[in-house]
Image (cartoon, rainbow, N blue to C red; front, top):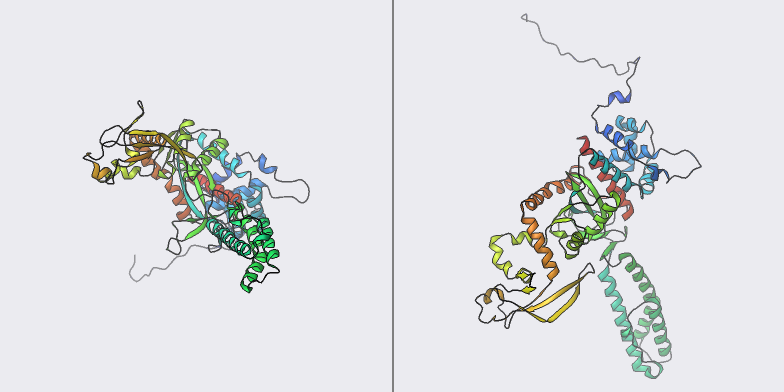
Length: 516
């Protein structure tokens, strides 16, 4: 370069308003391997006959449901969950424009489609997509890994109803009614029969109203303190309405829940990892269960129970019913290791690599001595039906005593009582049974049998491999959805609509992974 010459900055030409003789199409602007093409190709193969039946003939024309489904799924792939933000994306993004053929439904149309049309039709569509992925060899329905997570509901965190509070208030009404009845008996015993409100098996609106009116009529002409008059007036005005309210609340809670949110009655208060107050506060939410294979979601279900134990059977039954495929193997953590679950899996001939509570603790050598003296760890010989103590002595079955003990799930557990012999001179007494007398234990023989089989499977080479694989097969899926794609709180209310959102999340996850 000659001396004295200077370099000048060169900019690329920018012809913003230049007209094009042959303007490019949207299809030319989208890369061949873009995820939006995967969404289009997969959902074009899905049978939506059931979805079409959700539309009634007559009136103005409707947006095609397949187009709306594609737009929703692609929105969830891109972390767009609000109907208004989806409406905005349909007007601004070339990918949405290409996918919808330039159709621009508003947020009300999107909401109606998502919340109403998909209620009964999304699960079959999801299953069809899963089966298509199976045909491509991307996952297998024969080998499943199951786990659950709590996800916050779209509900007020501070307006709730507790089942224990309802029982407490009803019991207080019973006690106060009993006090009024006893007072009335002390003043006018001859005018009252022997009926005692404390003996009522059920305190309801009709019973309380009749009893209060009877007490009031008896005490009407008697010299009664103003305090008693005030209590009677308060009881007559408030108790029937309160009991009617409690009855309605109990119907909402049902038998399996302990609480619900007033703004979303289907949501149950649960303890979650995402704690905005950092004080262990309960929040309204749902228990989301998924089964995965190769990090693809093969099945999903929504539950109102805060524990995983009672969800497994319903979750798998729904999966088998939808897909028509029964898994050969199931791997899950200790939250699913109950007698009911083991028994059901054994009956269905599904090999269960399912931990039971304390399994990991028992693998620690330093705790081996402590675990050896637990009643459920005492040796038992199935061939002879004999129970042994840690010292190796046969324990006596006390009068063949068997009792049934109902668990939280409502299932009877048969417990057998055994008594040891010669505890006084046993060298293990200080560790096994420091109390006076011979040790008596109550064991669930069937549960112990199932746990021994589970322990043997889990400690095998295949079992160790399954346990390791579960950690990276299922848990990363929740990490992707909740943390990488920022979905930690449902947008819709009610368990049916929450199930729709979960299905869209699962469908979006699978197609996102396929496109990766």
